[in-house]
Image (tube, rainbow, N blue to C red; front, top):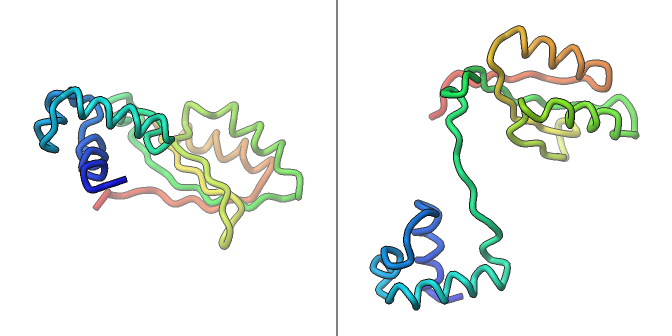
Length: 136
């Protein structure tokens, strides 16, 4: 990895849909040279994939929550199975150390959906709910 590769990664992080011609112009390469470098970054596993960012509020999911989960037993699979049935609410699920066992990031369309989710979760684990007020 050299400085040009780092510039490529920086530009692609800003806009992963950039054309190779545009990318080349931004990093002072031809479009073909930029494409070759991107392919090499993919082959080496530096670039693992491309994603999209979805505006959850536009989809009707206005409530943003972080839930710290404290499992009730050493067998986490029942709780993880429950979370798998709720994946339409889950943005991220992290196994963590420190305060709690898991940290899940969720979006919900209403308080009623939050309540239903938490009632189901409470069968498998204790939790601490933090609601996002504003992203800063």
